[in-house]
Length: 84
Image (tube, rainbow, N blue to C red; front, side, top):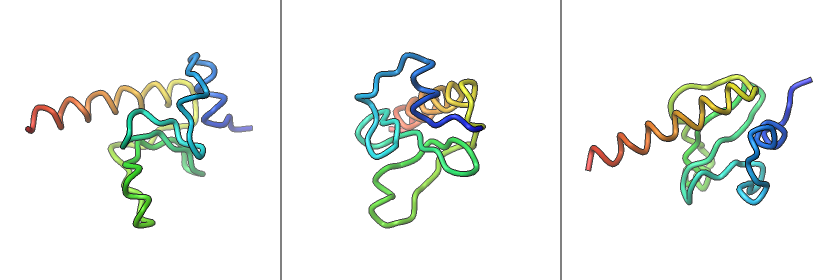
């Protein structure tokens, strides 16, 4: 059986306080979400228009996949800062 995002985060000692509506909130705008296909880095603001923007690549719902999404977030934020 697939593990939930909360279960994967617990294995990495990520505190429950970072979860909001089943999203692992990375900051005020970006979160990791889980759907039937796996894990995605998501722009949370895009949910207001009911059209979630998925950033980068999807990964499997595993600890390794969650680590990949966290790394992808760091790279994405760095690229945004360099583009300014």
